[in-house]
Each structure stands twice: as structure tokens, then as C-alpha cells.
Image 1 (cartoon, rainbow, N blue to C red):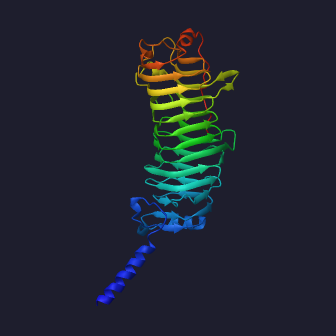
Image 2 (image 1 turned 30 degrees about the vertical axis):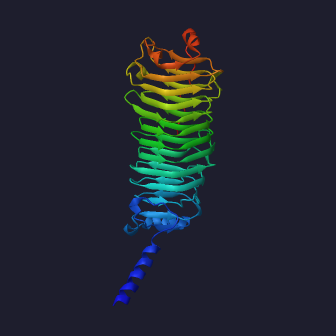
Image 3 (image 1 turned 90 degrees about the vertical axis):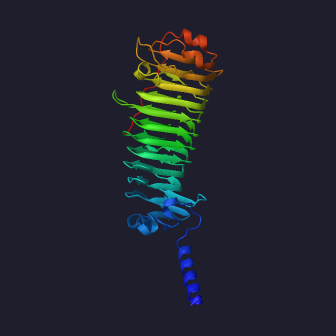
Length: 373
């Protein structure tokens, strides 16, 4: 009897081992089990037939999987933890339209679009590497969704159309997005566009070598409001403007460096600015923009431009430990089309352009729109 029980135990152990995949860092919801796929046909079958026995978890083997895929139900799709799982999209790439979905440890190496998340809540994109794509729009599009983008690499993105070459686009309404410990580098156009009333938090992230702007917020109509929080980030060697905020956004920038803004000529005007905010919100809300422990250097024109409403005093006073250091720029902190409040500059610990700021007689030209598709 004891021998029979021993044999049964061994058989059960071998059966369990078969379901325990090797080389995958599975979410806890997978309970160390997943359905393995090594080709697009196997992946589509797994997506269509995912069973409760695998906790809706799919493991993608090493190698290249080519095609487009629609994730229309809650799934955990995980690649090898050594980075050898590659996905080659065609047109739509990976489209996620289901709540509570996870995409992890996958490199996307081609396609007109990398990942789209639309009308889906609690989506996690972790250890995603998108490299070398010529995109017609953006390589990551988030629309009306809540998403965490963690430990990602988005690099070497070129324009496959007139409005292509973008990194991340958050669009629609009421998206809640967290971007953490991510690198967005060598982007033909803009690294991150926030289009419409959405809430985005960016931390421990680098935006570098973006051909137009590092981060850009736009298209907020009068009743809309968005929130943007930037903490412990680097915006480096971006062209035209590192951070542009257009419309009613509540913006917080903390413990961040902005440096190396290249000059661009637009409509016969030369621009090259660190932080630009153009909004009537500056005249309405003292919390419209908060700048704390920020250093701006290497800009061609202005470190900070705050553009409000004509004849009205701005209410912003949330500036602390702002250091503006440069040898090639022209202006430090400019208030234009509005009245500067007393004490605003008390939080500036360094600004070699103070006299230039005071002598400005005409508003500086601002970039004001990015076309969206």
C-alpha cells in the first residue's frame, strides 16, 4: 500500500511540474501555471480558448511572434524573463480592450502601432521594450483607460506618416495613467502627449532626444481639467520645448532636471524652452502649477514661460528651490499676457537672466498645437 501511495505522489508531482513553466515571472494570479504559445496561431488559440485551469495566463516562448492580436477578455500574457520573447506587429499590433489585463516581459520590434489600450481598466504593462518602430501615429496609445506602465523601454521611434513618430499618447477622457521607471529615448516627434482631460503621474522616468517635445498636454476645453504629476524625472536633449502645458491642467513638478533643449525655428520664430504653460487656469487657481526642487539648464530661449490672461494677476505662488542655470539662453522666468504676483520669484535660488526677464516688452512666441488623429 505504501508503495502504491509513493507512486501516486510521484505521478502527481510530475503532473504539477508540467504546468510549472520555466523562465517566466508570472503574476500571482497565474498560480504558477500558464498555457504556453510559441507562434501567432498558438497565441490566438490561447487567447480564444484560455481556460480557468490556467487562470487566464498565457506564456510566450522565446523567438518572434508575428501578426496582430486583439485581447478582448481579462488575460495575463507573459514573455520570457530574459527578454527573448519578441512580437512583430503588422498594423494594429497588440490591442487590449479588457479590464484586469497584464502584458509583461515582451519586446515589440516592428509594426505601424505597438500597443493600444482602449476602454480598459486596471491594465498593467510591465517590462515592455518597444524599439525601432516606424509608427504612423504612436507606439503606445491609451484611450479612456487606467494603465500602469512600469519598467518600460521605448526607443528609436521614427515617423511612418506626417503625424507619426510619437512615443506615448494618452487621449480621450478620464484616463488614469501611471508611468514609472521608464525610458523614452530617440523619438522623432514627442515623447508623451496628453490629449484631453486625463490624469497622468510620471516618476523615475527619462524623456530624452525627442524631436519635438518631451511632454505635451493639450486639447482641454473650458469645462475640462487634467492633472499631471512629474516626480524624480529627467527631460534631456529634447527639441523645441521639454514640457508644454496648454489649457486647464493642474501640474506638479518635483525633484526633476530639465536640460539640453535644442532650438527649433517655427513660423519664422526660434523656440527652445524648458517649461511652458499657457492657460487661464493660472489666473484662477494657485495650484495650477507647482515647481519644487527643479533645475533647468541648457535651453536656447527661456527656462520657464507662464502665459495667462491679459490684465489679470496670476495666482501661482508654488515655486520653491527652482534653479535656472545656463550660458546660452536669453530668459529665466517670464510672465506674459498677465500680471506677476508679488513674491513669485522668492522660490528661485538661481536665475542669471533676472534683468532680461524684467526688460521683456513683447510676449514670446509660443507653440500652441499638435495635430491629433
